[in-house]
Length: 138
Image (cartoon, rainbow, N blue to C red; front, side):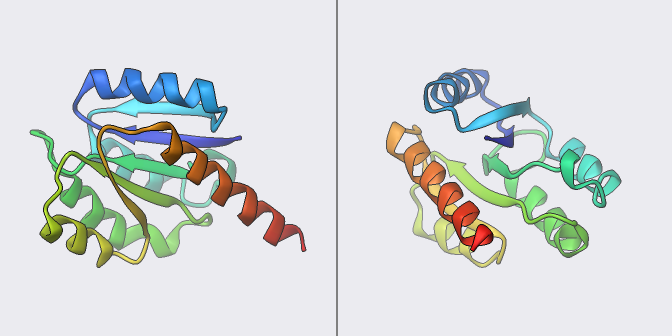
């Protein structure tokens, strides 16, 4: 089980993710926020505290108070200083190839997922997490 932060301006999306996480037992601790700047500040303040850092961040791209692009640009400035690798999953309703390609230009973005999230997305993430854990033990 892992720690997850959801950055999205849609409270309905928060509830849907919460439901899916509970069903799939993917996260033991999930934080929901509308403000990516708060998350960047938190990560910067806790960059040396491995247990305080999340394992995953689900990030919406288009939000009225600071876009996901703003978050990605800010994260790019600090991610190398973090004592833990954080997997960023862009979760957006945008199906534009331009957005998909742009998100892939960030080396720390693990995947681009189009909304709505479905169970197979969580199964896939859970599978990756188990594979990483197994690989780290060997």
